[in-house]
Figure 1 (tube, one colour):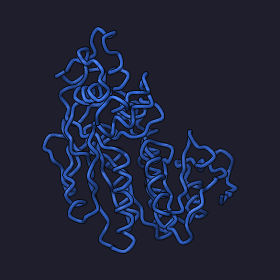
Figure 2 (cartoon, rainbow, N blue to C red):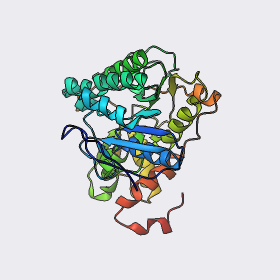
Figure 3 (cartoon, rainbow, N blue to C red):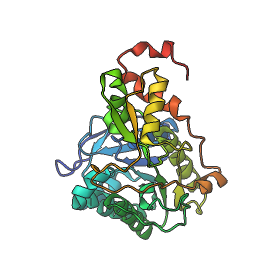
Length: 335
């Protein structure tokens, strides 16, 4: 086991315990490595033989570096010590309703921290991959290509759009990967807006009724697939200077929340009569959502950097089985 000791200001950057990597593997820094996507990116790049450093804030542990990315000095020292050849910037406030209520705090991580990371990556010649969102579009004229002008309808989308601009402005060797709603291996179902539907599915016959959105098209995308695309982009960028700018990646199955919940119920042979399609936009949401921000992913496909998305039912079943009351479901459920 290798150890990287960084003696910075307490509370900002602490000791990192880093896993061994094959000699000569590229040095990679993953921000937000405790998050839903960050964990998948960390795993993918380690599998590929990279020397990976992962950062986290509230959920930093023995294998992740505790770093406050809103502290400019801490970010500078982080990159100075780690000397990454590649930075995958996953850290963000990604909950639209939270951003709507606390825009200044969200901008600190989504915009200002991104600008600092971009400047520092540029100073060190690192390739920077920034994870953005389909919410930079208004959803009125899908599908959206890489060159279409953003027009966000909420504070979250505006913060991600501004993060993109800061990154591209300050770091020439950089790329943006826009993705839609994500799901994957979760620590709890509430970690993803997709798997958060699971408790509603489990209510079954005991529930009087459970209305779910059936008007906004979504394209749920597995984090394992996104992580593989991140690797493909970074690997290609190492030898091809044209690999920069905007990229889109998305699952191909269009589903509303109601349809996702139905698919989960079918996958686990659970009742679904209590799930009711709601065909009007819920009034409880603080942030307005784009109606259909479907992404055109053709650039990745033309360059051979895409991956075929896993079928939703198979992928979401793998994510949810640890949270089923009956762990024997695999014996009877067909994928």
